[in-house]
Image 1 (tube, rainbow, N blue to C red):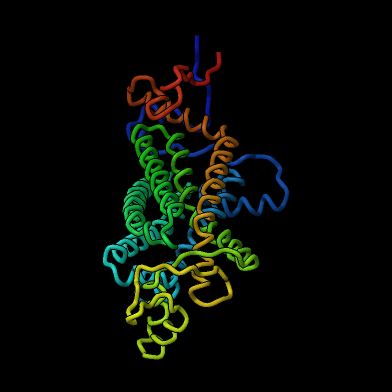
Image 2: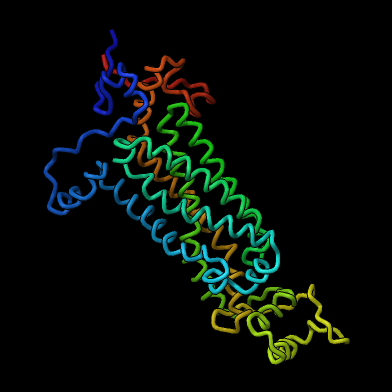
Length: 365
C-alpha cells in the first residue's frame, strides 16, 4: 500500500481547506544546522523577508537590486523634453523630436518599462507571496501589462533606435518576442497551478529584460575599443548632421559651421540634401556626431552578446536549482489534486505532456 511521502512544504490542511488551495505554500522552515557567524548574521536579514537559502537571497539582491537601481535612476527620463533629450544621442533626438510616431513610441516605452522594473523588486520577495498573495497577484498583473505595452513602444522605435540598423531591429524584435512569450507562458502556468513552470518562465522573462542593464557596460567597452582602433565608420544622413549643428543654435553661424564641415550635404544651389549619407568615424572622444556613431556601432553587438549571456545564465541557474523545481512541482501536484483535476502535477506546460513520459510524484512504501 502506497502512502504519501511527507514533505514539509505542504500539510493535510492544504488538501482539505478550500482557502488554503489558493495560497502558495511556503518553503520548509530554516535549517537547524550550526552555521558560522557570517551566515548567522546574513540569515537575520533574509529570513524575515521569506528567503530560506542564502543563494536565493544573493541572486535576488543582485539581480532585482540592479533592476531597481537602474529604473529608479531612469525615472528622470520620463521628462522626455528635458532630461531624456539632454541625455540621448542627437540622431535619436532628431527622430523623437520631429516625428510623432517615434515620439509616441519612446514615451510609451519609458512610461511602462521604468515602473515595471521598480515593481518587480517586490514581486520576487517571498514573504509577500506567502502573507499578501493578493498584492503579489495584483502587482504581477500590472507588471505584465506594463511590459507588454512597453514592448509595443519598443517596436515602434526599433527602426530609429541607435541608428536602427538591421541587427538592432532584429535584436529589438527578438527581445520583444522572448519576453512576451515568457510572460505569457508564466501567466498560463500559474492559472493552471503549475507553480514550478511559472517560476521558470518568470525567471527567464526577467533575465531577458535585464539585458538592458548589462549591455550598457558592454557598449561602453566597445566604444572604447572602437575609439582606440579608429577604423570604424558609419553612414549618417545629412538631415541628422544638420540637426546636430542647428539644434538649440538657430543662428547663421551654426548653419555656416555645418556647411563648412559637411559641404557634400549641400548641392550647387546651396540647398540641403537631406537624404544623402556621409561616412562618419566612430570616436568616443571626438565631435558630437562622432561620439554618437561610436555608441551606435557597439549597440547592436552589445544587445546580442548580453542576450546570449543572460539566456545561458538563466538556464544554468534553473538547472542548478532542480531541487526547488521538484519541490514546487509536488506543491502543484497537491493543489491540482485537491481541485480534482485530471493528471495532477501536469496541469500546465510540462515536458511529460510532449515526450510521452508521465511524471510520477515521489512516494515511499
